[in-house]
Every structure is written in C-alpha cells, then in structure tokens.
Image (cartoon, rainbow, N blue to C red; front, side):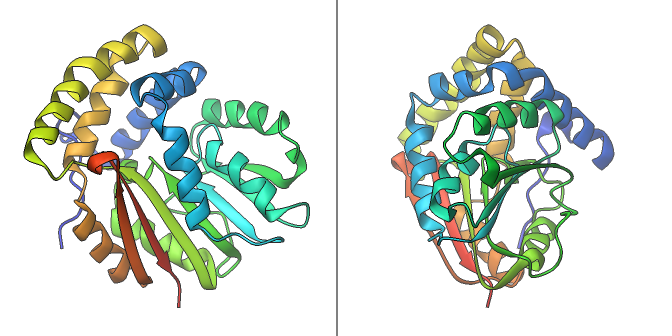
Length: 248
C-alpha cells in the first residue's frame, strides 16, 4: 500500500518545513480562498460539499469535527443538522482560515453550535471515542502521514462513528485527465495569482492532487486504519471523490 508522496515542489523539504510552508500558503490565500474555489470549480464545490455532509448521516445532538476545516463551509452545512444540542468543531492549523470560518459561522442561524480549534490534524485535540462523526474536505492531501492521520480520526470517533473524506482526484478517463491536467497547471495558478495573490499555492494544488492515492488505494488506507463499510463515489467525471467509512 503506497503512502501519498509529497509534491515535487516540496519533496526535498523536511516534514516540519513542509507543514510550515503549507500553513503559510493557506494563511496567505485565506481572504480570497472561497472566491477562488468557486471560480476554479465553476461553483461545483458547493454541490460536492452538500453531498459529503449528507453522507455523514448526521442526527440531532451529534458532535462533529470538520477537520482541515478552513473557512468552515462543511461546518456551516452540518450545524443545522445537529441542532442546538449538538456541536460542530472547525479544526484547522491556519489561524487566518479559522478567522474566516468564525465570520462565516457568525452569519448563520446556528452560530453557537460551531466551535473553532486551531491544531494539527495528525494530533487531534479530542478525547478518544468522543465524536459521532468527522469530515475532511479537500484537506487530507496536505497530511504528511496519510495513514497516521486516518488512524487519528479513527481514534476520536465513537464506535459506529462515521467518517467522510471529500478530496480531489485524477479522472479515470485518459482524455479527461489530460484536459484536467492542462486546466490545473495552466489555469489554476493564473487564477490563484489574480484572485488570491498567491500563484505558488495554486501550483502546489495540482502537484498534490497528482501525488495523492487513487480512490481504490485510499479506500485500502481507510481499511488499514480500522474503518469498515468503506465505500466511495466519483463526482464530476472523477475530479472529486467522496469516501465514507465507519468505526466498528
């Protein structure tokens, strides 16, 4: 089973240096992150995120972690589903992204449900078996130890807890993959520079997608971490994939 390799642009850096560099990218783009996502995905990321939250099968009173939660899109979608008796934690290592998440959560009808936690996704600040569900949207690629990250998520879930991972992937059809690569390497960095003011972050993005395990391999990683009932679904021709697993 192969582990996700670091992107070529970061491959010679130490693990700590790669973490700092990725955190710096997100701190720099936080102010225009949502706009850039919407433009580059043609708005599709909103549809993908709503589907991912549905896959969590949330119930009133659930405690949920939106890990690598960034500006809180998934947390805001989850909050009404758990209600006032529940809690949704936006967990991220970037202070600037969390600041945007705080603002976004404050504009919703359920602001008190959402809590913000700054921390490392590979050393989660939750007690073992304390969460009903966890979700990661477009952040699992950034972990330096993928299987270790999955084991840590498994640790904090209660028995029967659900985990959903929404992530970019490589389209299975060769012609579409070539078109997507062209878009990723020619258009994304340009849009990143114009909208977010950081070309480097959006050069890192396609590099990290290309280095990330394919859906079958990622499913095997989830099983190796202890998850069962693992399934996945490709979205929009395979540009994105949702994986789901349950802690037995």
